[in-house]
Image (cartoon, rainbow, N blue to C red):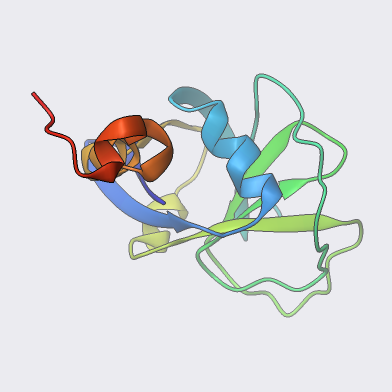
Length: 140
């Protein structure tokens, strides 16, 4: 699933992972959050509700990873690799397609995250949503 992150007048695309935590994250979109800096490597901000954190946990990250902390209701985006191992469990829920450097700015950022129009169109055409139309009926 593709998403857009809007910040400082720019739009950055990202791809959500194929896991339960990413599905739960997608279900709360669109949202606007204020993201704060942490250790000069990531921006983090609170989600409106916690994600269950079911799935594979990791302690490693790459620049551009979008992660959620468990069990907390925070999402973070890594913009710099500092070589540190992360303590605590996190779930990678997606990856920026480009533009991680846009998060490497002092102070907080207001970020709007939403599903792309293409994603909404593709979701509308999924077999689940097509119902009887998937069997070859006409869509009017």
